[in-house]
Length: 515
Image (cartoon, rainbow, N blue to C red; front, side, top):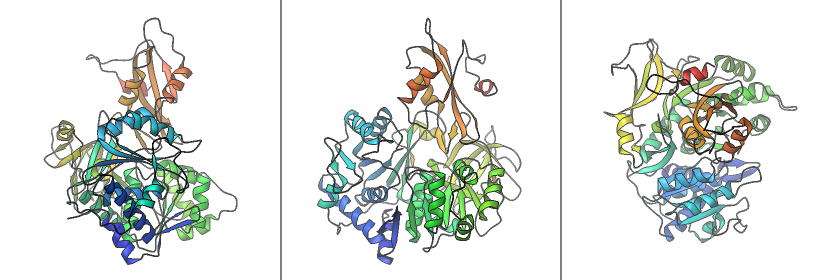
């Protein structure tokens, strides 16, 4: 028997009065977070929602996210965290595909119309029975017609709720990802997958209960959710929430809150390296920080060296995927660190570099990264064929290209062939291309990533007009923006009469990238 919610319950027993989460001066103790989660779990169970049911949540980095996350687990149900930037059509797809029985949706802000998008998505999801509005003010009435508020569930719940027992291999979380190719799929992660990854994160990064972690990485993403939130709760650390990355706010928070551990994606390090805030002391920040961690994309060596020189703190790089819960390998606090490397496999995990013939390649030769261990997902939700294609004989074939050195350190040579990594978010060209083909004036489309100093990669679409159609590039961008999340829509569009093709009719994306 294992339920991931035990990590919260144990920390609440050990140190009930200690701050678990801090946001803009507001403090929530471990006992308060645990009690709130139990109340919501009780309310869910009273509505007939429980073990094995899937429940989606769209919420930025607010205390409501961990409270709802662990409430769902306490009820024995499955958490489906959704990107807060998704549009209604995208949310509806995820609700339908995951068979979500309930949907917790933040009410939104003028800048983030999450509530509006969520209501439209809920209406389009046939099997979703309960819509819960997460309001800024827990006592406020629901701003969403037909929704019950999170505050109402808290008021009706019982903090004495006994968490539902689950098996170690029961699904705890479904993280949506396109995997190595194709349409968005839900990676099923078990309670054991996630507990072991949190445990290994604690051991690898040497978290202690006295640490103060900055949580600006989105908690709907595996990196922020597991390496920071779950690992921090497991060790009983204090976590300071920042809902949105703004370099000035992050710098101020690092100093004011005495942050000891910061984790981010390369574009965050790039922004912090080039940002100064009047009145904020870099020396103070450097004196408090003991560790930084980077993942999500390769960190340019110039950025790594510049940041380390400015803040006088080491950055440890790691590698993983949603399908590996997510960490597969990391540089370590207590061992040699190799800048430019993503480190060595974590405890209990094996990795290898595989050639085209399926053979294991020696150090220095580039090939596909394959991973085996306690971190490998159960599979893609309701997609046995896709699972069988990705996981073979227990090895997860990532589609990423890497190599090792003579000391067993891994290096990422390239990401999945067509995947774009924009500001740490994975963007899959096929999804955008399929949407572009819905445009009445577009007959053919290809999407590639182009280099960006600030974002790592930016999205560019090449489109071919249909017969008699006239395409205006800015109008295509605006059309896409209305239908895709902000991090997905193309910022550049180029209209062409034709696209370069191979002899078999495949678009030569390499030729498009090279101009």
